[in-house]
Image 1 (cartoon, protein in one colour):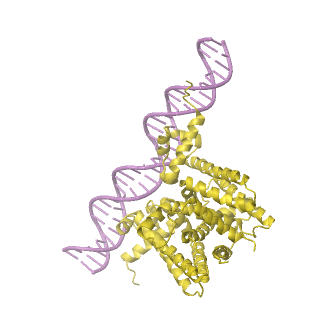
Image 2 (cartoon, chains in turn yellow, red, blue, orange):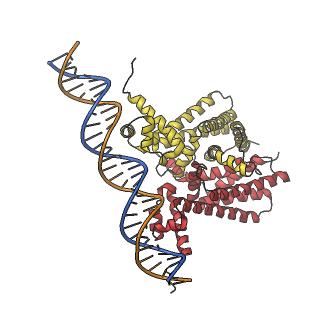
Image 3 (cartoon, chains in turn blue, yellow, cyan, brown):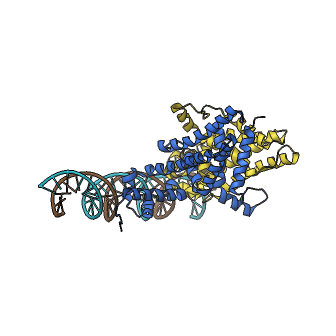
Length: 209
Length: 209
DNA sequence: TTTTGCTAACTAACCATTTAGTTAATTATA
DNA sequence: TATAATTAACTAAATGGTTAGTTAGCAAAA
């Protein structure tokens, strides 16, 4: 039995994990450092010991999430054999991640809503990496003559904006449907259906005639 | 000089207006009732006297904003002579409103980010009205054979999601450009350019072949 | 004089951050 | 190898500031 009583790595990881869960559910403001400490079974001061302050912890949580998405897109892109496929992989990977970790879109929207004001460098860099990835796909397609010239950031926001809103409003749309189902708000749509529809929309708009 | 010393309507309106401004700039949490009271030149207790509590005041501010957008879209739609034109008017009106009142997208995203959890009925109804309006345009186009069948909520989110993200990230994109301008993030794009691009994308995807 | 509009002063709770200290683990020394 | 010195990991308990909401009562209007 090599029961280690103290292990900085484990402790730090535990705090990060609990913080991710709590920030996810309740957002930055509503999550208290007391909450995080309690969930992690750790003294509150350790948060300051390891992460400087609440904001520092948050930044690390968030860029961790973006890095994961980035890695997943890169991975999915690996098994593509056309640029159109790569675009599809981008949409699919992002959508699947967003639906699987449904707290993520909420965090992202919240973060963007107090826009840049105090967006940590770390997080900004991680976010940007994902955008650059899409830009490359679009540029490649353009060079190959399969996509028309586009404004990358608009394509990017069209994809992630739509997905994020679909995920965050899911409970809302369900509630709405119960009250009034005269207009289809895709309350029961599968991730796959949504992915497909978004991809097709984007693809059609990029199509070379 | 008919300087009225006491007028409930005027006082209430003043509070609402200052609240709108402050919530816009700083969001719900970061705006304190003390701030609002001070800006309005009114005692804090009056907020509770007129609006029950901070959340009540917020709900009224937000649905006021949505109602304004709704009215503007309805108005713009009036001078259209084709369904495609109506779609264009929808995008244009929303984009112009969002850019003119650049705080609005931030408020909306923030509100949606703690999704429905405590979205006041009043606000939800005002939001939904705008969506229904777009649905009608899409259905009409479908009936006339100018649009293919689509999923209204996806089209809606594609429009407002993109616009909202473009507005909220404007300062961020500007900053990003200064650091690295190798990828175009549309930092200097005009509202008009963005409106046009979004409209064309949506239209192309709805096109009947 | 009764109701409505309004204010100053207050409270109770919360919460991020700090401080001052303890205990475990590691390294150096005898 | 035992022990002393040092560092790293951790804790309990404040601190200090903030903020939503309340209360009791005054002043103007009806």
